[in-house]
Image (cartoon, rainbow, N blue to C red; front, side, top):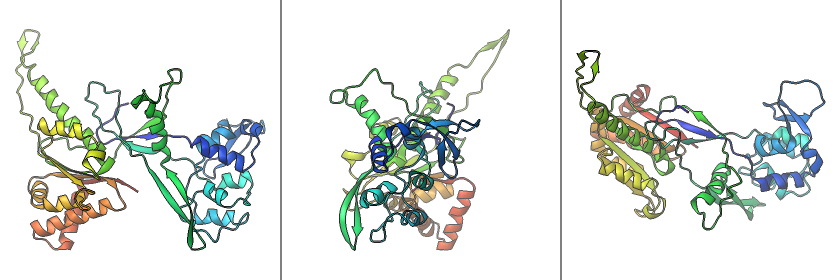
Length: 391
């Protein structure tokens, strides 16, 4: 796989086997029917039917494979889905905004929709994307590194105006990856089954504009709390290896071609200032890539590392550090031609960081709020303000 820093990989994970088992049992699907050949007739409508033996270019599989790898059994229900299920059960008394189809089946035992109807309501499983924390210049370019957070929480179910129960929520792909990695990380407590090969279906997902500038002398401001720091580790490793490669190339001057000496003009490798704004809850619990970042500081690749530990500093977040160091941020961006990268949560963090950056230009650039917004919009158009956000 050929990639550049800023790229990601897509992971195609299966449904939780326990959820598949419950789904099969709850809808009364016979075991024999699970393995009869099926043909996917419409990916868009998510419809499947038993193969009639007629020739088709569409893939033939089994219902079990479709339930495991094709349909998203834990997709959040839409209003149209609820209206369709309402013909088989009464769901009006429950707050359904964050429920899954399997939740509806659990909460309403009398609800028994036909299998074909349920399958027509389910979306397909979407791949999960993870940024790469590595450089193609590394000594093992065929290996890539990612980071993920294990998502687990309890969702209150409100029925009749009161909380009736709690539903345990787990991230589908992160839980699956963690289960695969656990034996490798803790072989003493979870023995590795050497006979079972671990296979994770992945594919390369190139970035459109979340890339390093070609000239390494431009300053960089990297803002990424939590797993948002992942691509920046790849950025820093790439700059580190570019500098090392330049030193190696410089030492090979004075080669010969035939009888003529070739004089190579050595250009100094100028590495611009790189400031990283990272955020976590506790430094001693979830400071991701701390050893790597400390090494980048020690080797002079990373200039400044600002860490906002929100549970140690009274809800102090990365946007507060950006504001605190506003004068330096403005100088690097407005006067030195620096680039700003933001990665992570798009629901809250990215908006708060953007507001802080706008305020930096207001205070230190003596602009109106509207002028500052226009300035950052112009930087984004010139790809000097780039965001990779989700949520």
